[in-house]
Image 1 (cartoon, protein in one colour):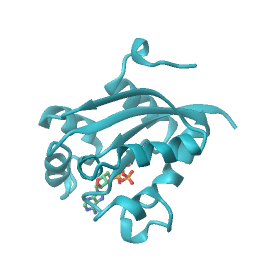
Image 2 (cartoon, helix red, strand yellow):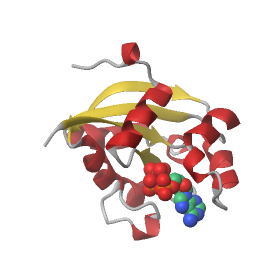
Image 3 (tube, protein in one colour):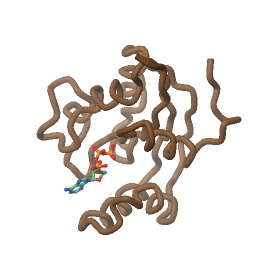
Length: 141
Ligand SMILES: Nc1ncnc2c1ncn2[C@@H]1O[C@H](COP(=O)(O)OP(=O)(O)OP(=O)(O)O)[C@@H](O)[C@H]1O
């Protein structure tokens, strides 16, 4: 087991539902520390660049439109196996397939509006954390 950092995004649908606190309570109860946190509005360029790997997928325009539809909370979670631990707390991408008690089962409406993002590998975590945070902005402890 290794201490890792992972990028989490609370997406516009969950922010609109006032669910930031409840979602962050789940991270903290699971032993993940929030070591970076900002609430921002993504523009087309920033959201499009973040999801560049999906650029050719049919859902890409709707994904960018959704991610720019309202504020998001971008944050860095740190802890033992943080990448997999966060993915487990999130549940499956499609909330209809998400296990009971996961964030997506409890807060997401659809595969488009699915409440949260979490990095899926050490390489993407490194890229995604650096996409939103400088080293100096992280408050590691
Ligand atoms: N088939 C699809 N139809 C519509 N939207 C989709 C589809 N597949 C993925 N998405 C959207 O694109 C996002 C990124 O897709 P990806 O395959 O990376 O899923 P994920 O890793 O579970 O989710 P995320 O990257 O947001 O954590 C998903 O969270 C979802 O909002």
